[in-house]
Length: 327
Image (cartoon, rainbow, N blue to C red; front, side, top):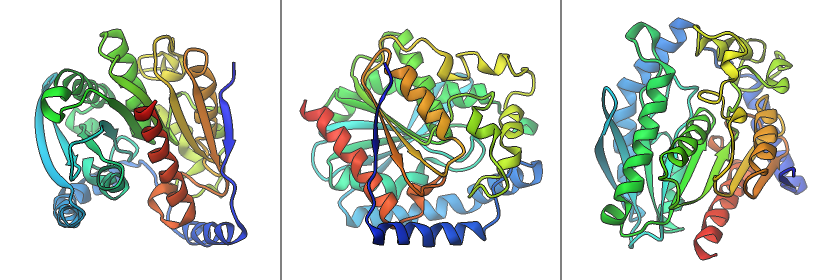
């Protein structure tokens, strides 16, 4: 059974606002994973990320949201979790995995997106500071996957004591959606997924061999460098050939979906990863209710660019999570 598909209807003024944002993006450099860009991006994340998070923490405090850092055990070390606590006892806990192509970003990347989940919707948000890939430093995709799995296991076992609730949700964006989907599968296999009522995947990556829309991406692609996208995905797993990159341990599109909770997929119609969301939503729907929300005029990363597309899509996420608590 295919997923339920919904289209976000836009007013003329909303379309004009989206077109203005896209016109600005068309002039911006495309993101690439060349070695020097990776090193520069990770240096910038280290140098400026902490200061930015301190500024954001002050802003969150004014909204009544308290920020904490929790350190939990993980294979080969520990993983740090950035916790946003709402002003009142939480109605549920969202386990959040940030985007950034597996190579940049941090748990604080989504602070502004998650602020309303905490301050307005009443959820605690636990964001995972998973290790960023850096082959020269020996950090591989498997380390990011194991960090996110460790965070999921910790939350499943400690939610009641730490937050006073066992109503849990799993949310991921872009590369974080890939890690969130793999975490859901790992928790299911460990029989620790029962408390997770639903998942939300925002323009995720679910096939590391490259879906048709990824392979067809051209130079007019916004934000991402379309012509190198398939090669960039292959670079994540240099020791695997194309068929091996489709294995379910790294490409959740090819996993058995049995035992998974309902899921909401959000996909931008200008995003070269749109086929990932479409195919994953259909595959997921064979085992659990699955909704695919298609957002017109939306490129990859659009929830960070402001404007009506971001605001309305984030409202859809809050509504989806709230309904899962109340049902």
